[in-house]
Image (cartoon, rainbow, N blue to C red):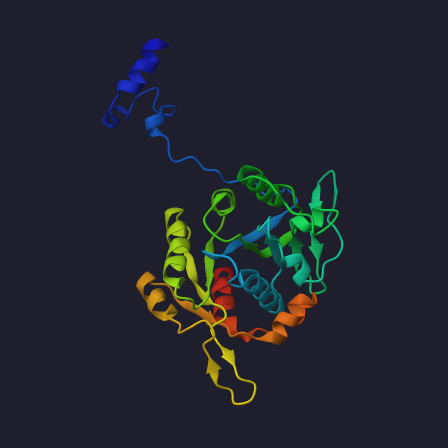
Length: 287
């Protein structure tokens, strides 16, 4: 055995052909896959991530809007709230009951429209209880949202990511078959760095970036209709052109939509500003 080990360690790539050890030789193995199997009672066609380089840019609002608009088009949609320490999807959709389960797994909640939702708050006795866990534990929960949750048949699972490029986004990219991401940002001067961080992480993980959505682009004056750039002038078009990705939407500040979200009535939101983003996701189903 010692001779065999020495032979494998000392051989060169051109000697692989015809070698009896080629199939087990480390130098002849492809990259290891970290993909987790989905629950046996789940059948999910497409998985997309909604990401941001920083918090507070309305990522959950975009995720919810995409889910509602896809559902209106007749697609079966689920939302995985992977922002374990700052979940908001459950409240936005007015879900007050906890998750249920049996020996087969955990069942997500379902909204009136039929959108399936899983969030850490659905597993807590009190939704104000803080989740004070270290990165590996947070990442483990996200894996369980994929392996242990019975999603049933879905056309799209949208993953609402936590901000940044830490453990949880890395786990999602490595453990779930993510087909692409949508980057959410806002018009502040930091946008250049923020967008590029999210873009570069996706590039390193070989995840396609479908495009960028700019939230809080402007506030429309209710009296004269003038656009007020509350957070400064947008330069998202220049950044998108530099990265060779499309701008999928520029969403204004709309207090009436924020009110619906706060009241748990998000399915009443009619957000026509993200039609291009919805089309980008729906295109996958036609390929």
